[in-house]
Image (cartoon, rainbow, N blue to C red; front, side, top):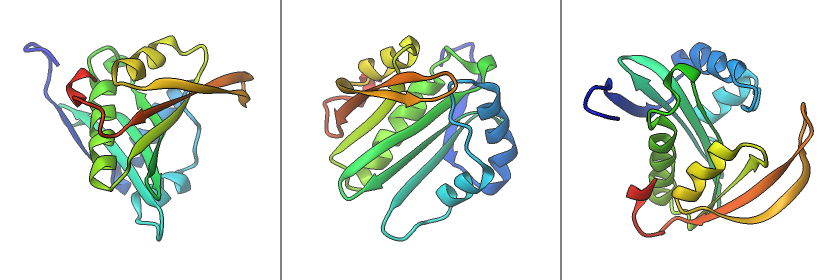
Length: 163
């Protein structure tokens, strides 16, 4: 964020954040519409499966969130969502960098994600962060039906600063 922009803080998601997280998710058609229980599961530690739920705060207000998981040594970015009023200010990149850093600390060797084929802004963000396309999942998304581009990034890729 620039010198004239408000300061951002990324932290772990807590239960008190869920009303705002759900509102952000509901306002963005591209974001998975998960029920509150799914976020509660992510917040709570789950045996044998690492979960990560982060929020980005701007001036004390939740402006975005990221969800991820880890099975053995493979992390998955499940979603990043930024309130429309805060988009194009670096929050998505900051959330992605934080999630990659946390996955590294948890022992992940790589991180995978699926992204709508038509979501060019997200695909550009991921490419800048070192993700490469490794496949296509036909008909992966519904409402509207669309293919997903599968992307991968080694966790130890040089320099998270390019996010």
